[in-house]
Image 1 (spheres, rainbow, N blue to C red):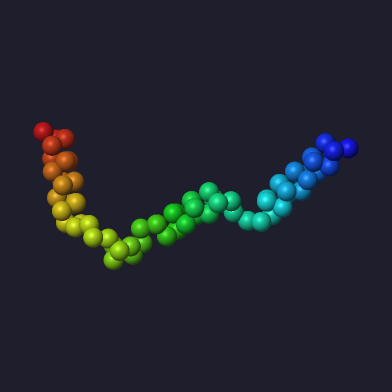
Image 2: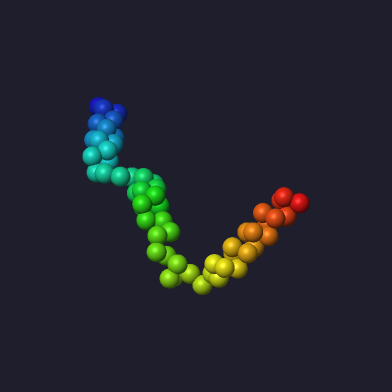
Length: 64
C-alpha cells in the first residue's frame, strides 16, 4: 500500500510540474533567446572598437 501511495504522489507531483509552465532551464533558455544581449552595451565597460581590432588581427593571422 505504501508503494502505491508513494507512486501516486510522484505521479501527482510530475503532473503538477508539467502543468506549472516552464522548467528553470527552459526559462533560462527562453530568456537567453529572447533578451540576451539586446541593449546591454550600457552595462559594459568593454571597448568594442578594441575588440573589433583584435578580432580583425586574429582573422588576418589566420589568412597568413
